[in-house]
Length: 161
Length: 352
Image (tube, rainbow over all chains, first blue to last red; front, side):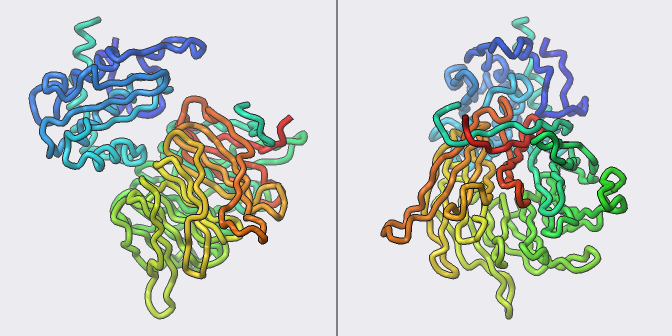
């Protein structure tokens, strides 16, 4: 189901206001619960910006590093090296993937694993500043790079379908 | 609803129309006009008229703006005749109405009188000084610009202030003096004045917030400045000398970033410093009544009382902006803008 979806950048639709989210098929009255594994399925196949591997293969993300509440998700990821210059991009790709896939009620926090990055605070701050994220997603060059990472994001789910 | 508070927020209207996240609203200080801006790059204008003991809001105009990216910020000049827009495309637009005066709003067209270029990256906030002779803008490029407003939409840059070490999120002018405040991703607040023989300069840095300072609001009489932050607190800074401000109070009451605050006169009388409204990523609106301690008391702590609160003000969405109507007789009217693209207007009414 998910794999056939066109990017919103291609369709010219809003990144933020999504009334057709694939997981949002229930009535407002019944709140669908989503677990760790489902979130993991959404992000495990995102491609690393520098390697020909997925975030799961590089152990950047794992199900254990995902914490899900009723309306809240916290994702921790582990950069491959402590000086990884791509950490912000990886975090942003996770954020965009979830923005496009999760029901709107979810507030998402994304952080690097404590101690795993030399600029941990700076990376975390940037990834969770919605204004900077919004502005980044209006930068065509960045979006192009981001779309490459996200091209493969639906693949894992395809296997399960 | 949550607890027994003396007031509650009554929804006056829910204004839909933006196709994407609504970032900010601005009440015209003179006319019955409310403007909103959005990631959809447009500005929407609504007027409001009394109707059956309530107010009827009507959409009267949309400005496509021509900004190539999100319109992040809005500010009316004190005369109510000019609207400034700050965009992620790094420019500031200056808009005035052409034709359609004398109440015939719908015939009016809003034209871009000038485009202020100078910022290198996203403009995050714009603000007019109380006299309307100065305009400030700030950006992710870490600078704050002060522009002098000349006749015929001519603007002259009076200073580029490079005091912050990071993204500048908000600029706010003192309600009567030419004092400018700016808030930043570097967790600080800076205050500036004009040196008549030199340039604009920073005379004070307020530190204490532990994360990004998102918003600023001066008290109606200008003796206090409120700031709201990603550290989930609101701080109120008291003017203790002409150029000296000290933290006098810290308020807590939000679970996520506090994106916006507004300080209005309120309706609880002269003893009050007014009503401070706040909102943010938790979707909640809080309204506090702020008072000075009695003169006889030795403590310097301001008294504060939460008088109204509302959760899920825009359903599940973040609320990005909150603003009290500045016009006389409308001191109990609040507007909010949310990630759901909607603009909501609220009236603070006594609880039943």
